[in-house]
Length: 313
Image (cartoon, rainbow, N blue to C red; front, side, top):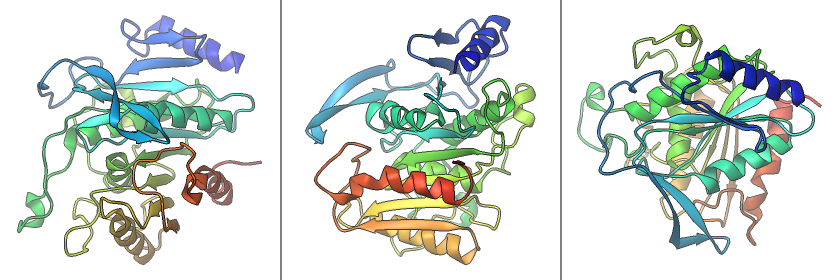
């Protein structure tokens, strides 16, 4: 832990992570890093300045959640594991419909859990709102749009983590992604579009692979069309990483079909996949405990990571 922190401090001091804007917070045990050394690719203006404010219209486990809006300068925040370092790392994609980011419910609270299990957590604050896109139309396959800014940020983050794996005491072959709702869709995009270069390389980190070694979609959205076909932006293949899915059947976003369609495509392609469906739980519950059994899903992820060899006892 101490050596890990010293390494991060040295990186910041040496400027290898854009030190002018990187923020090292040793008391909190994490470091925030801008993704891009300059303006992000395909940068677009937002409706207003970036803000963070509590949302109370939909309480989760009786508590509000924090929403980040108008993100134009994406960052990743690296959280050191607590206690034993397993060598695994997870990049976390919060949800929010590509309009906002549920930065605590599906972000910092997730990192608290992962780091307590000895896993490095990398929280991605990707650009929102994203360019609107709609796959539920009578379009040719080439006409379907991709959530380009968010996926650019996801690919860049995976490459940066892999590039700095040695300094951060991470195994470069055990770097995965975990996302919620829209972030769960970003998990699927990152898992299937890693050979598609969406931006011009900006430094040596961009020579690294952006393929996750494992992936977990928690109540993912945007994966199924109205006629229960797989979103054509998600081209599953035998190279798609092992995947974990969890969904509630009473998800008011019709979420159960999202996971079912994706599961079927993964299974057909021979990708190792584990899916858990629960009768109750709704949508956007994060890790917060409720009366429903579905809130035990983090324990299932932990067991799955050991099963596929990403976390070793």
